[in-house]
Length: 336
Image (cartoon, rainbow, N blue to C red; front, side, top):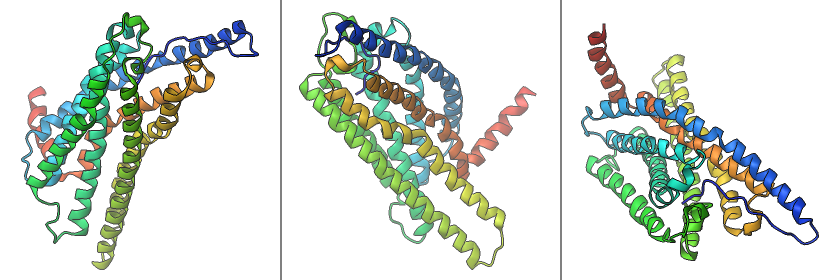
């Protein structure tokens, strides 16, 4: 679905000295390649933290009974975060000198497809968790969407749509066989016209989908906050500390979501248009290389969400927090 390391391509524009143009392009490419060296370092800094937090989250969630819709969504989100965590070392390795040539085919056809589809599975599940909170608080007497079987069907459908509806076609359409792996300047090289068209459509669709989910999350949590604060007022409570905690939880959920995923989705569309429509001789232009570096950096930032989710579980799910505390109380005495 995405490209990672672009080749150095030189051009001969009319009215421009070819030597000067080549030097200009080389300079731009050298700059972005130099900056990209920080990306694997950032990924490997995230990896141990994400692995620890998500292993703990999985350990706790496996001991939670799927008796509520929230727990069902939470368990699926934990599974998605673990998959993304395990893919991080492969992505980080691909940035290292010489490794792209060795890993490019498997990365483009399988690893990156799984990574991106899992990321949007996470985004979708975060949206359903927000809706679940909304219906439970705003419509507490209604059984709408509160059925555990319904939540399992929804979760299964999300995985199915993401991987069969978009992932599998991307794998199938990344079907070109290069003569030499050094010729693979980007994942787009492995796609035919149909694959490039599908790539563009899915990228645009995912971006639109992300902003729709963002609106849902903001609306849900703003309504929840107003409802809870109003209930305090109706009861005559002056519990300002409780009100502040509610606001803090909502603020954390929204901020974590937008800080993690927002920058990537802002730069993703212009980058995709440049990636698909630009002539091959402009791959080393300053505009393209700057956009490319921005895309890579914001993609890493989006990946950090897998470290944030386990922390949010503590704020959003009382069962998770209580089970986590009981597990630590059981384990800690053994190390004393």
